[in-house]
Length: 264
Image 1 (spheres, helix red, strand yellow):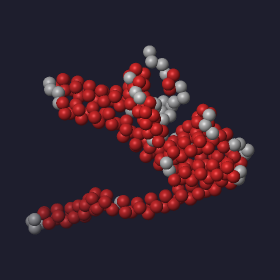
Image 2 (cartoon, rainbow, N blue to C red; image 1 turned 90 degrees about the vertical axis):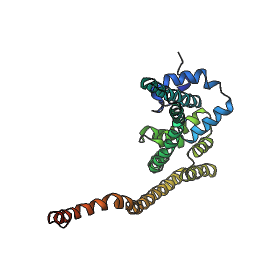
Image 3 (cartoon, rainbow, N blue to C red; image 1 turned 45 degrees about the horizontal axis):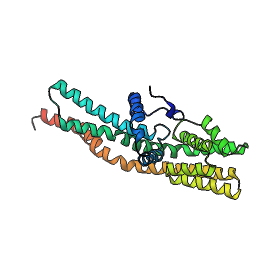
Image 4 (tube, one colour; image 1 turned 120 degrees about the vertical axis):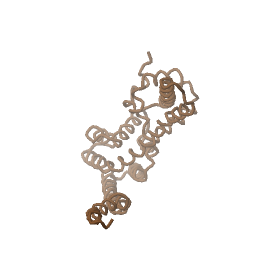
């Protein structure tokens, strides 16, 4: 009976919440939505900084923690009853682990999101540059990038920026919120350059083109750095796994010959 009105402008919920979403919405509607505004604002800021505010609300996130904790405790309880005994320590442990699973998920999501944004940011800057060169303003260029660009974190962030502008934020404020959510030096440089170009009245096309070239150079440098680090990272697998097997293969015929000859 709980409506979906609170999720009108949100994307589908994360996979960790999807199986329990009806129960999460019930707990959020009748329970966590009555929490203090300070608590909910704090959780909402954390979700925004980790890039998941477009997938789950603060009320749903806390409700998800409660539901997953209860599901974990119930699972151990059922298994304990079926086996003839309940391990209280194991029940508490599983309940605590299930409670922290959403927090671990958003941290892993932020790590993967930052990596993907760093990889796809030059591509989207090329989209913006071409659209601005064709005569569109920045929001129009972002709209075209969202419609034509590849799926991923950068596309979602541009969608959030457009939502902020549609909600009444100025272009500078929407970009500043984008910078706060990402907390990446490359994004800070982009936002500062675009904001400065708007204030000074300089060419937005030249600014975006310069940023695109700079981001491409940085991506190439990161790729070169990873290529140079690869031999060092391969030392441990070589020493632990490959070298012992190689010596075993080489020495096995010699050992068997000595064994057959009676020397061993």
